[in-house]
Length: 422
Image (cartoon, rainbow, N blue to C red; front, top):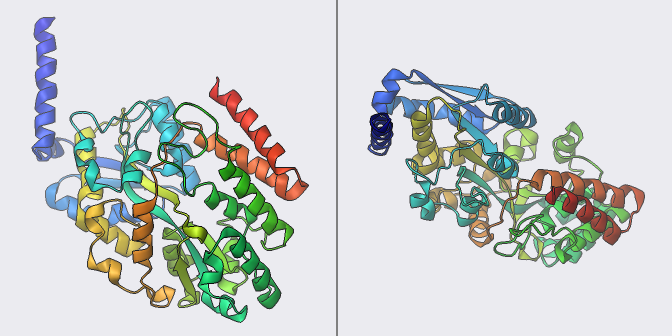
């Protein structure tokens, strides 16, 4: 028994040594492919990286399995729960990191032989924190982030006699500007009042605080942050300043194309989507700014993970390091897909100083870099996706049924507290 144990220990040490010494080429010769499961546009980034991968692993094929965003995460949830059809590399969006981490199905990339914590200083701090579970395990490596930004139609503001300053001074001023925009142009301030809520609850979160639940399991959804978010959204709806248009719908895209939506708050990545496929014909009409009141918030972000049941972990880790720690790969993804890099090594590249034609020649990447440096780390919790559903349900009751804001939030808190105590 002792001899067998020693052999296993020696094999493990040899595997770690091969990995850390870059000896994965030997493993690559034995394993002819790895599977990467991703969603748009991370799938395109992964496919574009294959040429670089082949320089190190010429005999190893990279199979990118691409699904629509929701379908991807549903498939990955099933794969992790059943330990079947698992990819070697799994891309996960920020909102799902905690849920997957708490399920125990992901490798701890902070432990040997991965030791990603030795590279922690190279990542945007809040992004690395998002990948860290309550147990301290680092279950994912951040690839791109979504610094919060306000995108607005400069031509619509001009028709309404407004400037960027009128949007930026405060959230109340932002709503007041919406009244003038609607009166002068007929355009809505936002697609949906819920958009205002989504950004405000993510803004100015205190260090160590969670979005919905803090590290001690306390539910935060009746805090002043949520009260203000709900009240602002309600004010937008009462002023008929939103089109009641859901994000990612055909009507949403049409609103951008036709100029019936004046502003949109989201992650910086939305500028790329507008330019590339949502509304490319509106080039030059949009501008970017920081959020009202200089609120610093993050929206989304992609992470690379390795399922515990993956077959080719050494190769998977090699691929993840290439995608997240190689400055050229990070910069390439930024240039091709507007995936704002989580790797700070890239943040002083001259590309940040280049004007963005779609935004009228504005150097908006400098704004987004500033935001990335001021966003506080937010603790993730496994119940975050459920909390979001509960909050959105109560938000709809406020907007559509006139439910009192504080009553709605109290009801949301009670529901969520019961889930926390299970």
